[in-house]
Length: 133
Image (cartoon, rainbow, N blue to C red):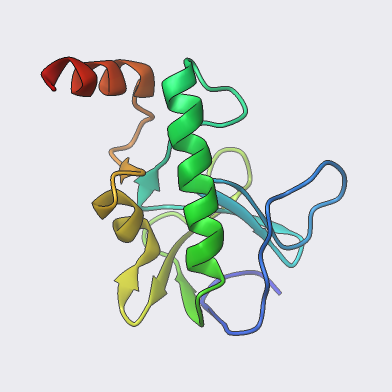
């Protein structure tokens, strides 16, 4: 079933492994659900597979583990806000639980940033944050 608006109550997510993917988490803003690839439309999380620096890799891994936890914490809805699909063919959805976006929770925890129409340079952002300390 295409993921237009879906209430999800009974899926169990794990980290994606090599091979076919059905229901698993790729990184802090991308997961597979029932064989369909979904990108959280409201955030940008650090990369894990093509991270530009060790700091981005570490934060991306934390964001990925946290998304697994959030997706497994109870029923969510997947909603279209804006485009339904990105240029890579992924379904663009906002995941919500109790009206709150899981993406905004990742942002509040410092594990992602709001989506601004493009990816940021996480290495520069993290280096800047480190320099301000």
